[in-house]
Length: 515
Figure 1: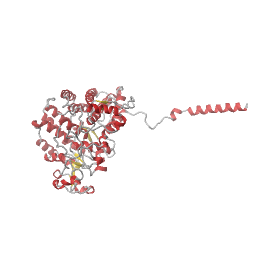
Figure 2: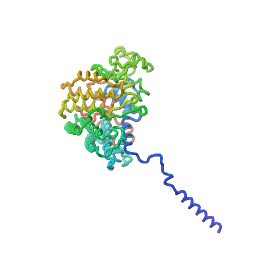
Figure 3: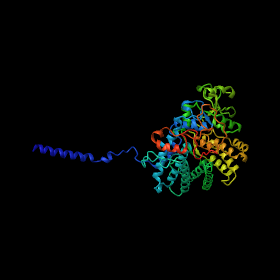
Figure 4: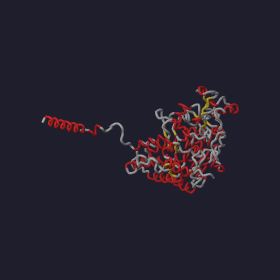
């Protein structure tokens, strides 16, 4: 009897404890700190910010490849800094853009487009996201060619962990479709989201950005599909383009959220990168007032510790660009010829002006858009005077320098003097327009690299470095796929290589047709 009573008491106590433990179980086990969902506008902001990288090391693709290929910024050093300066394949540096975009930008922007597509309250935000998605994937495909696109960013949404590679042709046609639809669908009468950081929710400015980006996408196809390029150029113009520097698509920075190129140079690489002679000489030969805003030279410096304020000069006449084709040893042979004391005596990008920690980074600008319009008019694809578009494009970039700060601003008289001395010459219009585009796009690495391949201008001499790994080409044509793809997506990558061509710096992509 006693045993049975003990059993009943134990059972009753256990049931009581179970009921007691269950009371408030859901509330106790709900994390009230970490979010279980994200507001789509904040995700869009993350995707916008991450295009300009998450840390300084990500910028090495621009510093070591993009800027060196187009001969604006160069380093004489090899090893981890080799790339466009030597025309060599450096695995770590060609992977930076791929890894940052797929792991960060694509993941966020695909989620935003999916999360907002069925929500009428998020109508305009959905269109913002489609436009930014097109911008992001354009950079990826312009850099690598065939890439994961239609299945990219869907590892969580659809459990696609090995996305297929789409052809660049199919990607470009879808980018045009997406930009046409999204830009047209933007509606100022509908609710917007003023917490997004590109335009503060201004629907009309997003619309201009969308159509201006469509113009850029269309003009990329001039060598491979001129009929499609012309068709969408006209659609973009009819839709309405960026019409002043106040419409520029740009990422703003502050002392808390830095310009990562400037941050990385200031923190680690200040003595390693220099303005290239072709760029400096072009600006000097044309009395370009932008040189004073861009360049600084520490005159007579014989080492990094001597690059101090007392030696600093922004005088355009004293700037000396580093010649192409030398390493840190062979560069010594040119000191006397160039009139410098050492490699540390060449001109550099000014870290107090255009690469200050709070300097903005530009994505699509009024200047670039007007210069593309000038080319479109030259080709007969746009109404209006190509010379007028050209003048507006050059003027816009000269005035844009003020957006870097008062130290970079160019005086109105200097702007007028430069404009008057450099009208468009119709006999060499395409070269003149795209050379100005080269200057206008300074520090926008992916766009510099892409437009140089598209247009063939400026007419740069081949980098004479003797250790080049290029085969059959004078310039790097694309970035190879990173080694990480061999591990996580080798089958789809190999299919793309078989279709597109060898995974080398020399292989051309679809729109970069050899004429």
